[in-house]
Length: 213
Image 1: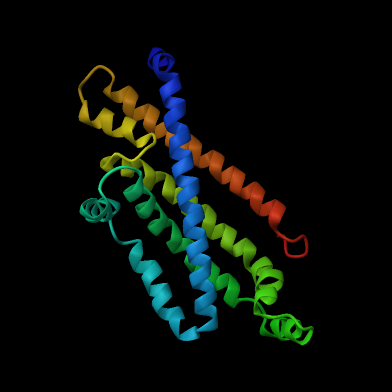
Image 2: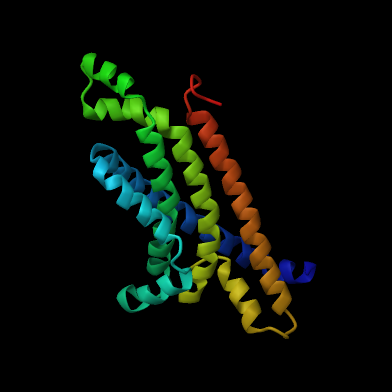
């Protein structure tokens, strides 16, 4: 195992960077989309039930099936990987954002309006800060889930450590098959733990002291 890593450490690090970059960028895209939809849902309450149903049903779609559907539409490589990861990542963020934004006290919003705040100011200065801990909790769940989806995205030649896992499975019985699978799997787990720790720190630093648990 040591020799295997020593011979390929540069490639392993490069693929780990690719994997992390793919997940971070996809989750960032998902967060922007999910929060925008959540804002719309909180302003049009009739959309809340369909949005929650969609976020629940979306998670039942197998990632292999979604990637298979994307192949004839966008081809192979990074693009279908980003689309698939962003799709799954948006679901828990959307659910948490709806819960967080809806949980802000109407009285508090009325007071802000009485102070002369417009819709944008109320959102940025009242709703978003109050809902931020709940949104960040959803974002952390999304990031962990996205690490696994990014590994599966190697099926469509997506970048990252998933290629090592698939190589190990394809060469099952070969000399280095187990090492490929182990390095890919352990690498994904380590990246997931590091990203979760980073997001936890970001959540702590960006949450108002008045509502910090």
